[in-house]
Image (tube, rainbow over the protein chains, first blue to last red):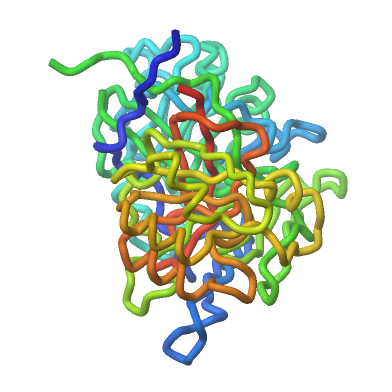
Length: 219
Length: 219
């Protein structure tokens, strides 16, 4: 017999998405974010309507395999199971790089969704200037996570890899291994522990990535 | 004591969002949807990256009170409880207009999230041309839903009100009553019944609305 009541809690969710606005920080070379009202009630229009223009990799977003793999899956191919369910926030102390030494004591298991909270969450989202020396995952850490066969990883700035460092190789490793990537989280309001995660990217056909909303709830 | 396991099911979710692509249908007067790759691996770029340009009221989206109410809440003010939790899909037979006569037998209760499945879901999303005579909610139905104090309503085309009919008055009634609106659902894959709903709009500061991803799971 089917259950008749929802098991989805409506309350207690914490937003871990970055707010979108014109002029916000973005990856160097990507177009500026523009959110502009084209209908304005204060001007006599019957309602307010805006247009949005941004890169698919700005703010909180999901990378699809197609981002770095020719003929890879597009964002619309993502199974919801990658982004919905139990997740673990792991706090990282190293202020430069996430290294395997810091990951190993956490005993990361196959199929986990792991979100790394670094100094980025506090440091990088309060400026409109791109922060080049954000904390990133070392290539060795990525190899470790691929070997552990995690389901999804999340990071708290605009790339899993470091700026002008290991971007290409770590994206190819993760995406090639079928591990989905959430980038651009703001984890400043959560601490280490277990959470329910819901992260839903926009449903873009064949998208290389998509802006997403991501929320957590302590368990 | 806290529970240690997630209660959020990872499987069984049905996508009720419209897929986004260049050239897709939009409200008359809104700008065209453009999703264009600015980096292309087949051209020798190191990865694929796209830009997105669209109205905040295209495809599956959420209307904020600010859409029709000066100084109304923006999309970032939305409480998740409006869009996460139990919801009911109600199938509508009338192919022109949703009228109170068809709503009343459903005994809609205070606090419900109700999604109306009409012929729109099958008829309107398979064309790039805007369908002017989509099924909409009559002003009397909106008054009925406001009186019932539902929490959220969802419709399966681009407006709760009819084209060149009652758009302004029904938006003002609903949004003024604190009822959140999901527009642009594609409910063709679900039938009447109870579901878990998750609908997450992009987190746009002071947004009059925002593109969203919406999913359902039968309960």
